Image (cartoon, rainbow, N blue to C red; front, side, top):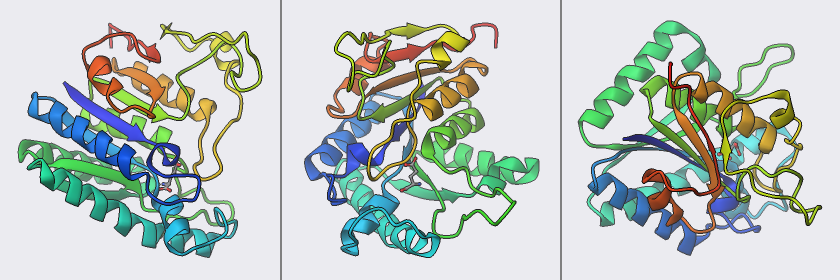
Length: 261
Ligand code: GLU
């Protein structure tokens, strides 16, 4: 299978913004193993800003754009250095691609992206993708950013024709209510269609260092389901769940791609 895995900042970093070493080591080990088993893996990773915050000893996620850009520039190096080192231990080669919204909005540029992705996978490399946060900023009245990696991962899944998109987050999946506030909230294992009822379940939650929340995950689900690709939201606390997810076993919430797509 061609699998796009998206990891959020809350999975990769501690609340301090510093790398969660044990978690990242485990994640890389599982991804390397799934690749050894014959799957083609694409990693969409957040964490550039979060890790830059840690490395620059900033008090929290920056509010102003230039500091955010600076944090991303510093943190992206740290991220790639870490992935490169860890994947190398298992004999895998990583490739970094940083995208802006325009790279996927204009057909010609999108085509270039699809070409390089295809070639990287043919060459056996493991593409690691993030938004180019150091330069992609919104001008007044002009939206040039994708803004969060749930949507980015769905766009990437579409460009590479993925079979499966896995979004690893700090929540187990989609619930009938907010499990942080409501004890009776139950996990929804399978979603066949994004109905208004399903949409109503998405609160605007997010963590202190990352962005996104359930609403952006549903947007991502809608994008990939239309293309016949399944999407799973699962907790990134234990990256071993990726084995079960790749095997089609019930973990988190699975959004089923349209069979006639
Ligand atoms: N691109 C951002 C980063 O690397 C993350 C966006 C998101 O959290 O979805 O920090």
